[in-house]
Length: 179
Image (tube, rainbow, N blue to C red):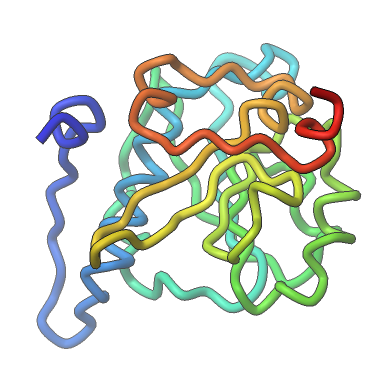
């Protein structure tokens, strides 16, 4: 209930022939709502009207679920959906969902994105421990998420305390070793 009240709900208008999976409708709504609770540095955008680019790297598990985000805006910025097959195509992304198809390349992808202004999101096991910012996890057949605040800080992203309260907080192995 608290998640619904903080993150809001997204109305879904879907045709019967291309019905997206319920799991990915929920994840698409989370991606949209993450953008409401994350603050990017001003220079992450070309200007005040630049869109928030939501990119999918690798095989797209969302299918038509992301179509529910068309014509939506956050703080006056339209949401644009982009699909990419290689890291070179993501430099203008603000939110990057790294698909499970990229699991074998994950370390290299995260190395390239280190110090970027990109909110990285995935569903690959161990993603936040490796340096990703947000990872979807399934707990008791429900979609939840974990956040690596150190990775967000490294990308100069500010995550709202409201969002952090809802997440499982992950401290990467290298950070634990410092303690």
